[in-house]
Length: 481
Image (cartoon, rainbow, N blue to C red):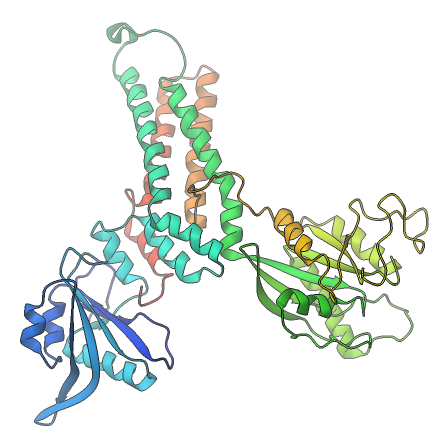
């Protein structure tokens, strides 16, 4: 049997809902002649072949067995006629019961009828190839599937609605106009055109496009944050209240909390939503200095080592200071070490309900005069009462660069690293073209750079593409997408 490939026209089928037990499951089929194939195993074949697009039929899926038929499941078949379907092809969505054995039997029956299993992302690939969606909308489909918060979903939905495509298309049109002016100057003498002057023709257009590209590039950190999230590590000395804060932020008791230091031996993590940011929150073992009273046992030592490794990998560190004890040597050592790393750190004065933090202008009584507090005073919180947690959410959002200040309501930015890299490529080409003409270099050096920028924008939407690029993009999708 020949190996399937993106771009063939074989009828395909795949489960479009998560595997496992559920009330219902949806199995999608698409491709030329797919309704005729499906009618071979449907209890009402003539009705299915004659069904109008966007209609639903009730019946049974069945398959040949001995001299008769074996019933597989009672189903609803949603019929789609080309080109009015997601893929632009003829197809059907089969709604069946959601048991594992039932879904497996339905898929086996469709394979008997002549469908092959779809490749990852093949439905979206066919939608792209048939002009139903561009590449930005195709990629936004998987962004929607993977969205962990409502904010991430809304941003992906903006791209699915075509807003990024619209921005890229508008920039591309202006850039093509500037390129046309430049090539006109190269083809004819300025005297023939009735033109004079130095510099890049259409410079204002190029600068306008460059500004738009810089704005798109500036939006990427926020877009990436809302899609991929961030790793937030809670650290501090033993018994500073790390597990209590972890539970408070999570809203449930996940970490064991006891008065005994060293209770947490290994890190525990959970996903939380902080103002639309998917935050991978990690509770770590308490950090001790060597030689402290009550040395940690082997298990706790391993936990401490893992905590230090997590601190190096973190996107943001929430460092707890036990307010009832004030700053200790280990607190100062960790804060000084972390200050040299690129990720932000938020010092927290925990147990503020028992011991309010010192005034910002005065060091804590336990801190020697030659060791002032951190540049930013610690944020007072209480894992027990919830005091300061709302302020902590705001501080995390600000420290990670959330809020996407580069774009206003309804605007969007690159949704994937591929898109961001192409925006950067177009931006770099335009910056070089402007630099060359500013130095008085001939236009025939600048024109190819404008063309390179046009091609990069075309790759974002798919107007310029190759088979390898498309396979790399769609190969990351779910099978049923």
